[in-house]
Length: 512
Image 1 (cartoon, rainbow, N blue to C red):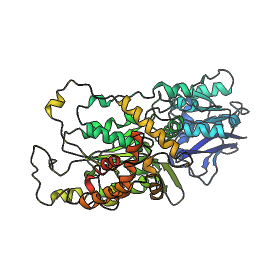
Image 2: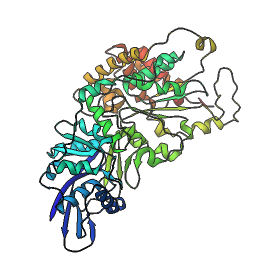
Image 3: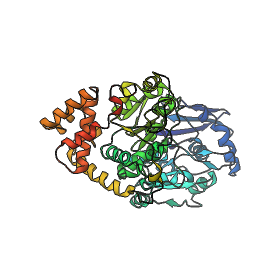
Image 4: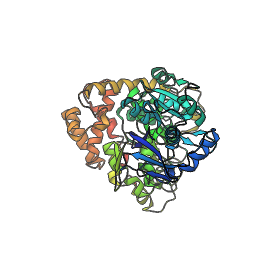
């Protein structure tokens, strides 16, 4: 007898429907075809044990399992459950008429318990698009799948529950999630707040500008000046995720297996802070079974690289293309996948190996030339993609001991949202352009027009401070964002002057 069950394979952040065909005939061998990897091939032992533990029998006949389409590699243990159900249906132990209406996915334990899977959300979206009635999956992943409208999601804990469902002896309970309610429940619920930070008003201002225009930023300062503390609070002043961004972000974390059982939808912008020993594959994604890297997990949020010069040169260089294109393509001999990677890069670094170059009180003990060598670990092309260079100085005791209440993230976020609304209106007819940092050089010339006095100021600043040519567009973009925060239609002199101030590392002789 031939029976078909349905599951899915995840490639990138999208899923593909897989038909699991099971044929039982005379003989005594077990065959699995359709490009399965070792985890799929090993399912026989798990399936056989789980079937016995559920009180049913494993057929002692020739069993052929085909995973179609047969030219796409199938990976992982999530096919255990559809294979087990298919074998039971093909051997006549459960009815097969309802199988065509459901996606079934789950890893089996030897005792018949169901283990969680990765990528439940993109799989559920694919099931809904293909017109399936429901999705039967592990209870730990059911909340992810339940946010897809028009699809019934059943969370199960054992193989016996699925068998009872198809035997119509015991119904499964549908899990329902109100997507909008789930989305609004934790929105704006942050652990950190800018009110915790004493002093550093100029740095807060720089991060407000970065958040308003989506600009990348680097913080340069001695140890203990508050660089990490400030960076951790940046997501709290970014505009809240919209529903589309929340779904997109949730899909990536679902594919990577980073969502907890309690999460149905990510409602807070991600903040990722990888250690400087990270490999280039872990940062951008890839591997034998391609997985999203840190830059994709930071999609629609913040990627914080602490102590930037300590990262391997190759790791930093692989970020250059994703920073420009806001996506990363991972190509292999047989296939390629694409992951979104639209994130704000926030980096921090000491100004020199000892950390006290340019310190107002402590003396730098680095030898001549060492400071320049340390800074040169960050390549020009990477620095070219960072709009704001901000010098962070230590907070003095009187500010630390002050009882004065600092401005809350909520108030700063309101100004950022207002500036983003101006940009949304400005770029309304541009599909892939949402904020100032994404502007092309051609768009910069059109949107960031400056007066004759502004041109003279910019020319004078570039000559006097020794600013490089690459700083020109960056200064104009940041000036446009400052003007948006001020609600100004034009880029004025004061906006340009403030923007020029945020190009520390472009100044000739900054480190010498």
